[in-house]
Length: 150
Image 1 (cartoon, rainbow, N blue to C red):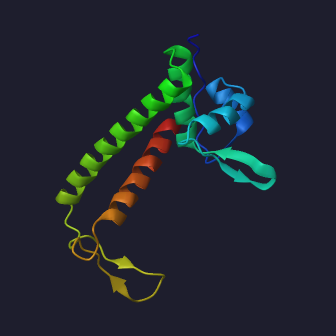
Image 2: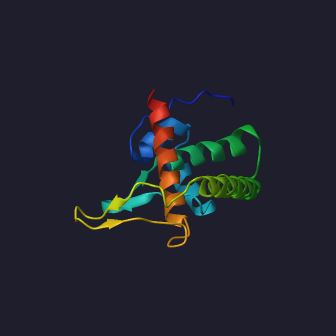
Image 3: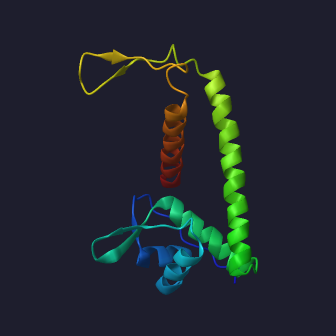
């Protein structure tokens, strides 16, 4: 059942129909997978319409591969997906801790807050670095989205 899937367009939200086409899965299957895979939580807006983000489309493709191409059962795919997510988190923690050690937050450019004349400098002693890790993660996601366009 090897089928090449179309590239994921660079946009913020996808409807359930768009995700179905991008992942080769019918919408009712996506709704079922939401019940079976707790990591899959699309945003719901008016009328209970689902809006998926880029990372959720990638996760659906991974679930599809586990179920359809590799022959996993739902529970087996759920366990495998959980293992993959934990492994990625461990890798990110390792990468993020390396970055925190390398960056000297005291030397980093000061932040101007809300257009005011007050200038705040953040250091590791004032802040555990968790904010910086979140900012880095967001920047990496943006870089990934931009690389999909080019």
